[in-house]
Image (cartoon, rainbow, N blue to C red; front, side):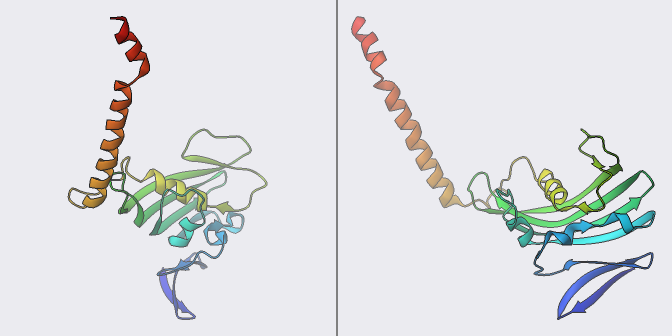
Amino acid sequence: MKNTIFVDSIIINCMVVNDFLYICTPIFGGVMRTSKEYVVPFEGLKLGKHHFIFEITDAFFEDIEYCLINKGVVAVEMILDKKESMMNAAMHFEGFVWSTCDLCTDPLKIKLNEDHNIIFKFGDSESEDENLIMVHSNEFELNLAPLFYELITVSLPNKNIHEDGDCNEKMLDLLDKYSGSEDAEDEENEEIDPRWKALNKLN
């Protein structure tokens, strides 16, 4: 059962499943104070399905060095099905992120509406499957922040480009101008290459 509660005038999303209350980040304008907001202590969870909702905000991306995303607001709904030897996480990402247009370098808003299934398997071996994550015997919680970032980035298009007519025309003209100058300079250098001059003298 989904609920909304108020704590110090901040709206909080929460979920009650099997008599457990899972509280997630503030809905609007929430600040990621610590990475604990994206940590799930699975050791105390009963076998069966558990429902989590996480809110990813600008602060999430600001904490990542060399981040491909400038900012964004993404809601992540996760159904974690815990079994004896593994946990299956069905995740739904919905929201938007801001990146940079590859053509005009202006900010570009990208919508997200993606589903991912990740298996967390208990064991000390290694996995080469991108959808299978090994959980070693000495671990008792899942830090989902790196996984969330990876799944968001792989959901981005191969080329981040505005739709026709939405690019910054002034910036495009400026880039074309400098690009044309560089091409002309390269051509001029080729024309005055001393090696070519030496060959011409031999003719």
